[in-house]
Picture 1: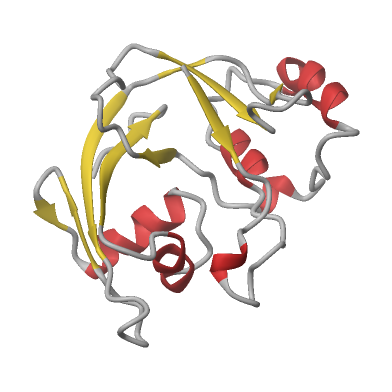
Picture 2 (picture 1 turned 30 degrees about the vertical axis):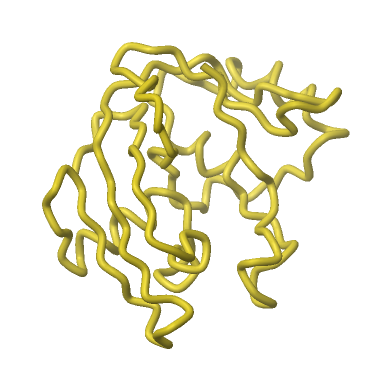
Length: 171
């Protein structure tokens, strides 16, 4: 199944982030197993030149090890294939990485105080277990966000969905 990714932070993220690159592509590449060598990515790099402003310093970025999606129809299952794309539903749709396999699914619930609370610290439950602050920091970084504040600006209201893992990571 296709998972589309944005390449820039939306306006709702505020002046600090809005319109700036989120580098999800590079962060996702960093999460891949060692068998995905530079040779594997040659075809993807060649096709991205005109579509995406690739950051050559991607090896310095923390990996994005999963994604979070609403799944009201309960379609995502372990073993499914993931087609990671940018510019989904456009003529420039581009799959930026090899097909991946879903290795794990976890339920996630986010209770967000933003914008009613200036500390941006909401609560997050994974598989009905509340994460402590250290676990929450790990989840936020592993999902490609630069900070707790950025995470709760993105998920700017109470939200429930699934964490879709393509690595063996679990919370």
